[in-house]
Length: 494
Image (cartoon, rainbow, N blue to C red; front, side, top):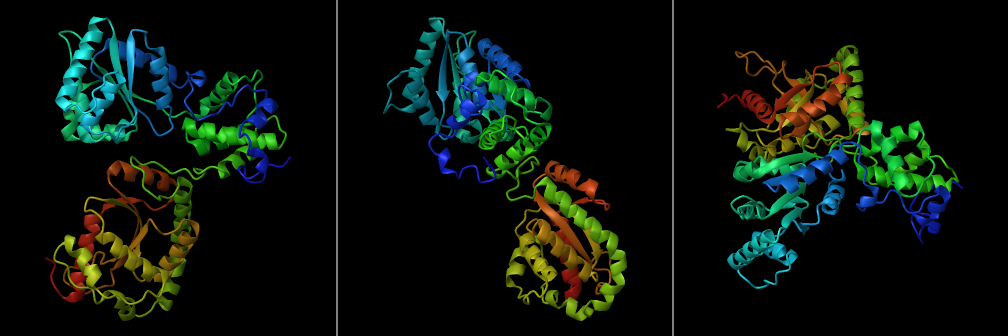
């Protein structure tokens, strides 16, 4: 059979997405489901140690416990395993809806405890909760609240949970809270208004990504739990491709491995090849996984595309010396080249840039460079002053042909969404403010909220670029543009 077709398309797969290959591979059940099933718990990659640490922290009954991890990293599985392994004297409550308001949270916890308090005021609910928790403590029981997706909780709800930890006896907390959330939860807790909550957190854990070295072991563990008695071979090339696509996220590993088994079944194969994984990746929504730089940038280029853009830049830079003479001969007169910018008014302060851009009439762009210059001015007006960019090239403004060629190549390879171009005055002599011969074209990449995010991307670009990639901020670009505008209009800088 041939698996080159789209995995989801054959009608013969419709009755059961997994049953078709269970007998073929000697399985009792589907090995790579994404529903957290304790039967498939993998103790490697510190998962077993994390579970043991959670059990210890909960049974100690002190403070708040926090566990964070990326989407699909296995937080819910650990939550289920924790609930399953806790001693019988521990009563487990679940808070599954993170969007509840503070009063709704109190009612939800009361309902988990079996209290019928619908319609009661928040203070009455809190008193009833206190009484019920004291009664359970007197009976030798411990109560733990497991709150999932905590990063999505409103701030007031997080504060309400903190106040619940004030319910205590002389020596014990009456309610133990475990927060499960994505890394954004830590960003929230780092805010000044949550410092009291942060101080109550006595144990913090993080779920790591699965490294490439443990991928084969993880797959074998899942297959054995599903009833496979003999090893199912994933070829080395298949494992490499799977590891690159999944990026250590176990949910992605499960989705891709499941689809790869479907492709192997369609080929009547007993081993999973790189081709089967390639088909699985093509059938998955994350086959072009985004890079992470502290915070995800929507629509950002993948690392591969970034390196390709840097390689194109390298080709352009190494050839620019030979192109300079031809560029000068073919470049339009300076009066024409600067016509698109001669009507720009002086700007009193950076915040007025957006208004000036909106009011200044611009001629229709005739080249990709002209279009990108106009688009970048609009983009600049919308950025915050503290945003950072990566400066990937700075060249004389006369080298318009070289810049045009680079933009065309970059557009075909990666798109121009995250590339921005500005015409800046350069290091013009102070006594000749109207001198534009020192003007330059500045090509920058991205928009980053913090230095760590920018540095992560710069580290990916730097090996492929012979020119040093510099960090710059939006405010400095605005100031240089103001200087250029002041020089062209004959007005001094404010």
